[in-house]
Length: 109
Image (cartoon, rainbow, N blue to C red; front, side, top):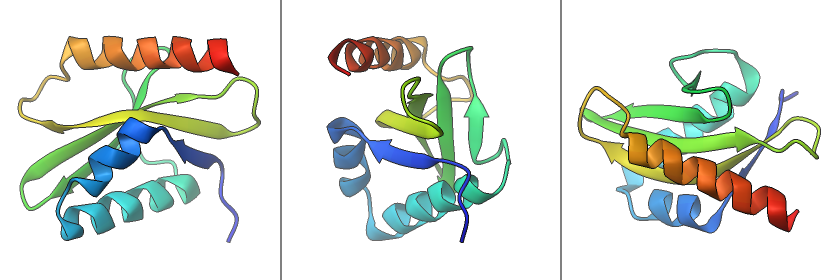
């Protein structure tokens, strides 16, 4: 199967996924794989010019993985961290955290 991009998880994103229930882990992984094949803003949405979020709903809980594109790699997205979303609005501090992780990533790579 042809995918449109690769996905790399930073340690914090990986730990976030592993800390969720087995059902949520499966659904998050499924949605990431699906978003690699189809362009669907319900699965992968741009939330500012640099930050995107993988979106998953599982048993009335909203999961978000923040991500950014690797400028040096062709078609690779880096997941920085995740949250369980508790309100309609994405917390500004989480977007800022993703931006900081992106800056750190670019400085190291």
